Image (cartoon, rainbow, N blue to C red; front, side, top):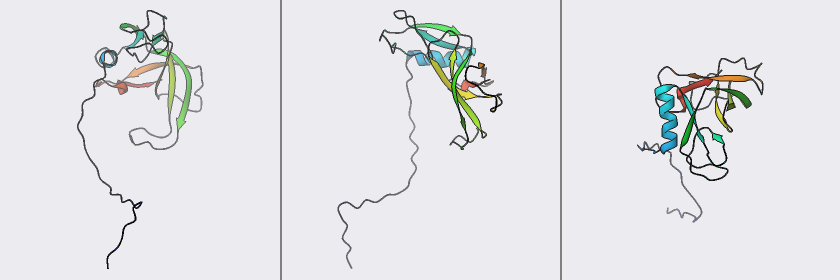
Length: 150
């Protein structure tokens, strides 16, 4: 018996593909991650037109659209602007539940940096608390070179 297939019928199949790739981060992000990896330093871009300090650094100011190529070193200390406590298991299983993400306004910067929080009692975490970066011992040139903010 022959079966006819409707025009709007679709089929699915599950699969898995590994695709090797290279991603070029650009000059400013490359400097940012190199400083994290090699020197345990957080750098930011300084706009010479509107005087903003942007972290993570980018090549163009998001306010005045000036080209950014000046960097400043931040000391890794800042203020917690906001946070969320996570109670579900994300795909990266190395994080133990519950844990917190925060947006930190680093001293000297005008923008916030989103990152993991650690060594903090989640019942006592508060907006406005002072935090500082803790770096991984083995750094690879990515955002997780900052282990967390405590």
